[in-house]
Amino acid sequence: MTNIKTYNAISSKGIDYLKAHHYEINSDEAPKAILLRSQNLHNEPIDEDVRAIVRAGAGFNNIPVEELSKRGIVVFNTPGGNANAVKELTIASLVLAARPVIGAIDFANDTRGGDVSLRTESNKGGYRGTELAGKTLGVIGLGNVGSKVANTALALDMDVIGYDPGLNANTAWRVDRHVLHARNVEEVLTQADYVTVHIPLEEKNKYFIDADKLALMKPTAALLNLSRGGIVDDSAAKDALDNDKLRVYITDFADDVLFDNPKVIITPHIGGSTIEAEDTSALMAVRQLDEYLTTGNIVNSVNYPDINEPFTTKYRVGIIHENVPNMIGQISKFFGDHSINIEQLSNRAVGPYAYTMVAINDFTKDQQELVKTALDEIPHVILTRRYVNANI
Ligand SMILES: NC(=O)c1ccc[n+]([C@@H]2O[C@H](COP(=O)([O-])OP(=O)(O)OC[C@H]3O[C@@H](n4cnc5c(N)ncnc54)[C@H](O)[C@@H]3O)[C@@H](O)[C@H]2O)c1
Ligand SMILES: O=C(O)CC[C@@H](O)C(=O)O
Image 1 (cartoon, helix red, strand yellow):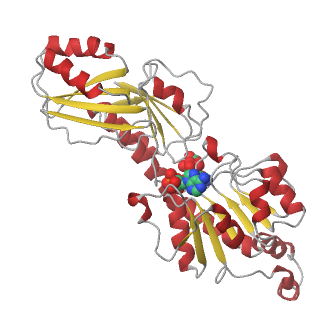
Image 2 (cartoon, rainbow, N blue to C red):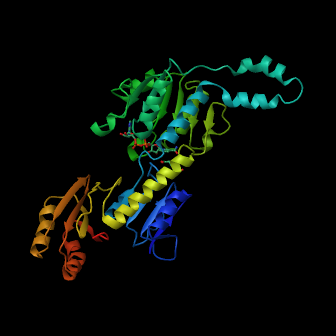
Image 3 (cartoon, protein in one colour):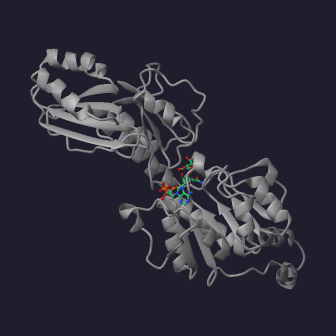
């Protein structure tokens, strides 16, 4: 049985799927894959036998992707699996930024005893808020979460301006045509009454919202961060709040500098914490993992290109290699030189890496042995795996 090591609370739907597909979980065997949520893997040794790491979730800044890529370990995430959950908490956060709901609930509870009705009615004036309708929402990052937030805000009668230079033909269609596309982030920051960030924590996005960007925002604006700690410079946000340059800051990421500030609302990283999102993300994760381990198909990898082909031959060889010239030539020559007939060859590259999948029907034991030992010797090949079609 293939052992999968897990971290964090993975939905039982995902665990049951693995068990039903002949995997064992956290046994004494060396693990072939790791399944996790927010566990920080940066300083953890990764077992020699590990072939894949799957993040049941969107953000993968807790995984040392660059180092794993050099070892041929495929890292997956589950894009969109929890986007609706984050969207809903973002909308709740918008409401909390517009109306003093938390203070009002505390006040209502404190009126216990005596003529409750009279006391609540006569003091509720302190809990008046504003409406979202007619205000401008700025959405930074229009991916799986940001596009949903932008579209939903339109339904709340907000004007929405979005910024995402990474949109492409496949992703832009998700954004409603009534969302205004900003040419730069400054346009969003200067115009919005509410700014919400939905971008990954990559090197280039560290402290993306810093003191300079905060200074561009309206002093009456609210800032929402349900992306990651580290995307907003929390100290700069605190300064802006303390100096009345920002009205309210709502974040899903606790930070010491933010506690005990009446203008801050902190939730404990619960954006994706719904039953539905945890089930969906875990199921996506384990299906992608099983598909890779049994067929070589790569779906939703963050470090290698996706190749997802029907497995119609008896065998396949998956070759992870660097994205350099003449790899397909050398790989095809290798198969030709050893009289192995290629039924189909797929190749895709992304950044410094590429993946080649070779489909084969007639494949003798000697040839299979040769592929295992000699194909890896081609310069720039990182690793080679053979897959056998159990249905043929
Ligand atoms: N709070 C939570 O529990 C929770 C849950 C899910 C996701 N997240 C976080 O939210 C992030 C976004 O999630 P998603 O599912 O929408 O990811 P996604 O990959 O679908 O979308 C991210 C978008 O951000 C854009 N982007 C990147 N850098 C940008 C920048 N500097 N300016 C503008 N746009 C930029 C990309 O082009 C992409 O379209 C995740 O990376 C994760 O860190 C948090
Ligand atoms: O797993 C979680 O609880 C959080 C997930 C979230 O941060 C994500 O990036 O998808």
